Image (cartoon, rainbow, N blue to C red; front, side, top):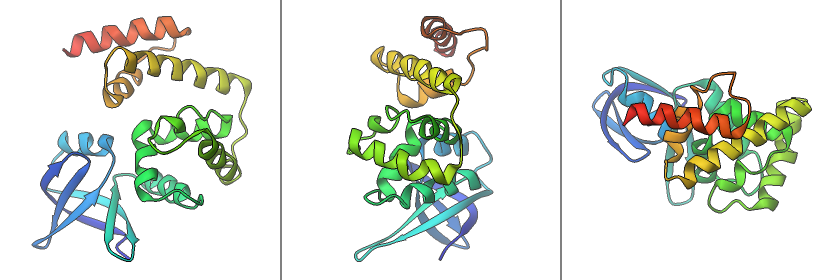
Length: 194
């Protein structure tokens, strides 16, 4: 199994990169956030932790910059009915910490944002992963997750992409407590970027 690759970026297309290693180009599927981080870094020396999905008709590589992302990706794959493409789509919705909190608090709305994952599958993921994560959710965490999800949904309704909304939400100050305060602050952040 290919566990790690180090090389330079040959090409980037959507959420797929070609990593040149010793003259060989490996096509690696990754998250949009990882692609963005790679674009912002030195593309001549990139190290990706990888997962090789072996199928009857293909060998697909999935790569991540952090071990934590790879571990969560593999955890998602352990849920019956979740394949590599669905797991990658889930990781595109939010960062790993947010997803872990969503699972531990039982907040399925993050997972149902993914095409092909309905409420039933989202609840199945939560049930199967909650024990593996070993996290005990507090009521405050659950409230924060709901408020964060409301903010995220409002930004998408206003036409911002998932990536834009996620990046801007990372910069919200602790003083913004209500969803309306969060949205106002995020809109200011997004307005400065344009």
